[in-house]
Amino acid sequence: MNKQWQTIIAVSELESKDVTQVEYSKLTLAVYDTVDGVFVSNARCPHAGANLCDGYFDGKNIECPLHQGLFDARTGVAKAAPATRSLKMYETRIHDGDVQIMF
Image 1 (cartoon, rainbow, N blue to C red):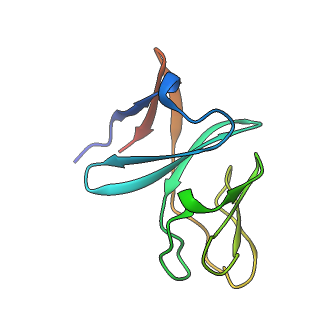
Image 2 (image 1 turned 120 degrees about the horizontal axis):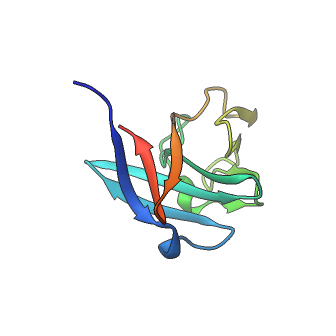
C-alpha cells in the first residue's frame, strides 16, 4: 500500500501552543504546536502507555504525566528517564489550512 498525505485536523482546531489529541484510523495521535511548527506523534508514551496529551508541554518538550519521562516533541527523541525509546513520529505538513501526515 502506498503512503499518502492524510488530513487529520484543521490548523484552526489546534490548541494554540499546546498539544491536541486527534483520533485517526484507530490511532490516538498527539499534535504539537511547537515554537518550530507543527509535529505529530503517537499519543502513547513508549515507556508505560500513558497519554502524552495529558502531560506538561513547554513548546518544545512533552513530559509524560505518569512517570515524567521527557521527549522532544519535534523529533520524538527521549530526553529523560525513565523514557529510553523515542516516540513514533509522523512526517507532517500544513496544506490548505490542514495538518496532514504521511500515512
